[in-house]
Length: 173
Image 1 (cartoon, one colour):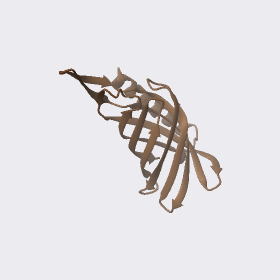
Image 2 (image 1 turned 30 degrees about the vertical axis):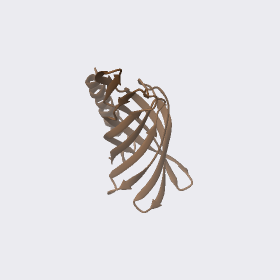
Image 3 (image 1 turned 120 degrees about the vertical axis):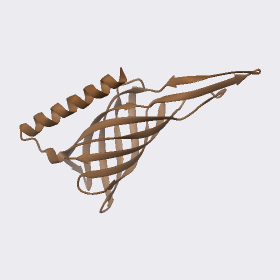
Image 4 (image 1 turned 135 degrees about the vertical axis):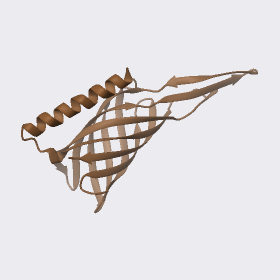
């Protein structure tokens, strides 16, 4: 099911980019990206052990024409799958272990990128998660512009029940 959602989102993004390009939309403001995340459950039980999960995300964005002083603004939508968490529990000489499927789903955020050096930005995001970990998303991080089209990002992102360290790459058309 998760693969179907990812493929459907990629198709919709491709159609949207193609349609926008044909309509004279400014494609230099459109970007797509993806990356990996290492996530932890915030309310894991103290009597057991739950590992960090490694997952992925894909996203698309648009640079807005509005700036907050020197900070550029953008909007992003994406899909994240946080992967599976391994768990173990031991008590009274007995133990059990297994896997817990991590949260997955669609999200949308507003993004501000503040330049601190010619190729380095500090970024902040706020938005909503519409998946298994639905609710407010906030995040901070840094981006490095490899060139005009490619940006590498490192972020700390907090959702209602999980915290993630993310490494992403964004490609501007």
